[in-house]
Image 1 (cartoon, rainbow, N blue to C red):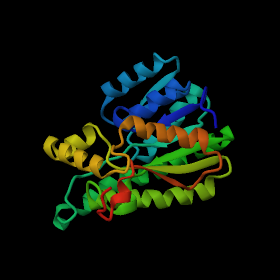
Image 2: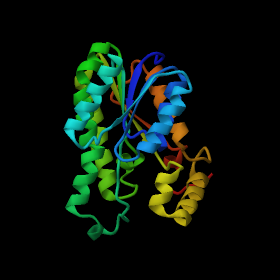
Image 3: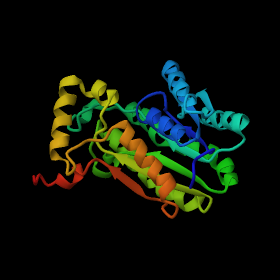
Length: 260
């Protein structure tokens, strides 16, 4: 699939991985819809960067946990561009809680996390189905996580939500083909403010060092390397659907504790 002159919605793209995807797509000549729920300043800054690369942008406030917002986001995109070729379900949330602390998570924590990470992705897929089918060749990418594969990460609720998202990726791939391919990206440790703010600077730095040391490639993902993986799936995987691509520098290869 070629993305030059295509139109992409990237949810949660005011910072981090979503912003990196928007910038990379813009470099490729793809028009981008920047979505935010709280950080309007960041979203508009990303839009300015993308426009400087010669593409058109649209900035839309929407909370993907709300079905009406999802439908409004797609409607605004169609009004502005008249087409929709790519949907990146990147918006996500969590609550940092050690996995052994079973009393640290409430029912509401699970509902809040699932409403964005899992239900939000479903609602966006539903809202975007008709225009993406009309495009004829479209691609939906769900931003999952190694947490959904290995039961690790910021909390059990987060891991469970991403595991559900991976299952949903397969279900959607089965029913949205042949016009729409559906795949998932599973980053491992991603360098940046999101994890640093959640873990605290000292814990973040220690975990980053440990992650790099234990990875086969001696490195950890960044928003930019995750964005490159997303682009690769879209432009280089015409016969791939229902798949999950792990982006962790090979950290999972040392799960047994064996060191090189």
